[in-house]
Length: 447
Ligand code: FCB
Image (cartoon, rainbow, N blue to C red):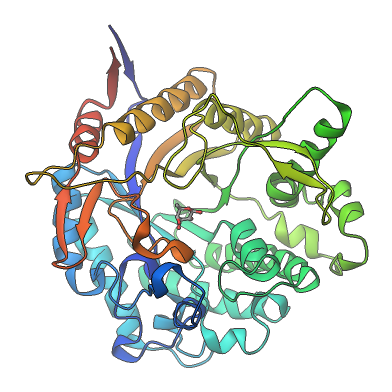
């Protein structure tokens, strides 16, 4: 039996996002976000589910912080709802919105849990969408102002800051494929959204640096996943390269190298957004860390349609989660190595990793052995990366508790804590107890 220890001070945490857990989306003067509007539009989410109640965290946050403390979490990654702070997205500040997060941060600090704040986890104020949302270049300043307001209020206690969560998802699924809010299918607008959100990230980094104390760490969170060709053929290899370029390199290269991948521009032709002089420097503003959300890999073959000319392929040998995502722990190692090779001194965090399974409560217990195994295998992959010199500083499990899984509503359970939505009771799954032990030991054994 071997023991896998993590570096001293390794930041074990769990992650959530505002619209997925809070509920009470319009309480205390908050504006409606695009996810509020979207989920209240028929046909957009599974079962018509909305975030109206979610985990009722907006009212039960004290209880939830107590739960995190009992679990021994060293850190908690959560996001701020922009429309609670600025109901119209810009201009007038709503003090009640800031107060909510202020109290949450105080409670976390009291509990010895380090907060990691994500400024944007997809719930854009609806009023800004009416002006074009991320497709409007003015959003660079709107986001900068918002970042500044939040940093001014929480910057004395929050050390870890992420600007955006998964820009690929909210631009491609939101503006190009239509599965997420705002539900558009417009490549032209989506690519502008990509460029503007990266610019907005750079603007926020610069503004926050002028306010935050020197020890603050500012970064961004990307969803990254290796893309493997289905066969050794040149066609499939090129298809995998195209998907990698759009999903990974389109974000990593501008942020770390100050340039867009040439292949991406070739692929989309006339839809490519205008890049002004100075833009790439603003985007490539030095960051203190990159957060990586990892769930699965892609297996790709040549396709006939769209700018990607690629199709996903199923792996008949593999196991899949309830999301239909292949379980492929080695991919976490691959992606950590890749980002590390692109920027060898940059600190990395796994800001999300976890799995949905069909959990059931039996005699007050949720025996989620598959999730324990999923997490164990991914922790081992992270450990291997650390052994190989990757400066991985922490790991946030997705998610602290079951929640509103976007277009899938409440049908997918990612939590290590089960939420009984009828009663709002939180029930520890076996994975939560197992994770508690991993954190306490700062490592684990492999039987
Ligand atoms: C990520 C999101 C997160 C959650 C997980 C399952 O893409 O950042 O909010 O939905 O997937």
